[in-house]
Length: 266
Image (cartoon, rainbow, N blue to C red; front, side, top):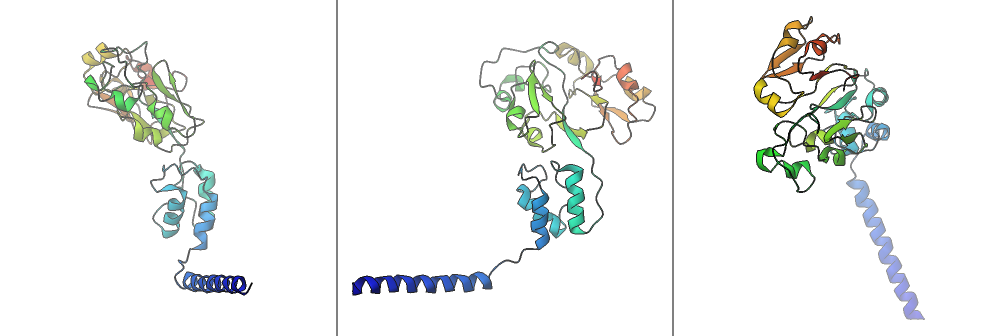
């Protein structure tokens, strides 16, 4: 009985000493955390998608408090979260434009041609290592094997008739799809923009028409007719300056290839 009591006392004493030791050094070497960081983190959505460019929401919260990231740095939270974080930081709310991912290609199974039949793993990254960078004749177009769909944490992408389509209402502009696309044809565009160029090909017009019926042929008609000088043709491909675009739709109506689209025609 004496042995049991002695053992219990020893164990209890050791535990007490270790507890005091840990408590002392925990207090001595604790890292002070700015309370604003905790508050900012509480306002972030917690998706940890990395779309902000930092390692998750914790990383972004720390960066905002340190002044290394803007208060509107979370693409998922959008303007509402940005306003709350600005209030915490005591700064003026930064302007935030809602962005959405856009697949710059309309070359689905009916409009584009195939160089060969691919029967391998249904993954765009794997297919891109094949001959011609994939089975499509156009070396710039959407491969349609759904790597972007698998990467999207919000279920905002579907593969329709061999081409990726973004549901802009679900898209949070986190950037997962942009990062995984081997052909780099997904970009962020303003959600409110109506006119877009649905092509990524930099080939000459004659080669484009052989590969796809709706590819940009670089004719520059859109550039010549734009009343606000918001569209330029470089490397046989039209590009829109969304800050300048008035959304008049003239370029869409003039485009002979029908690769300039609006929400009604996409």
